[in-house]
Image (cartoon, rainbow, N blue to C red):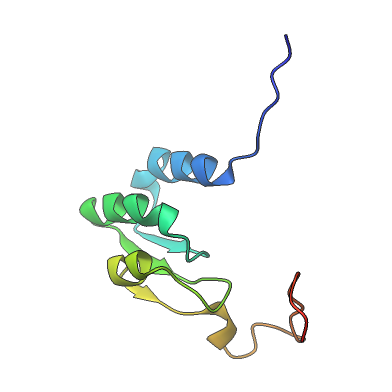
Length: 91
């Protein structure tokens, strides 16, 4: 019987973040996904600073209110050298 592994980057990231918790003081999440809210709460309970920088113009209410700060990546001057093209959207 062969096992087919499904990619689950969220879980893998969470495991690495918790496993290495004593190696950093601040965490930056490049996502606005509320699935990370429990992890953000855990990190803050361990005295970590948590920053959220979604890659789109959206961030969940939970992450926005649960983090120490948040900023949309698009709002950082000069971060993109050219206009972004979004998949599935027509302009």
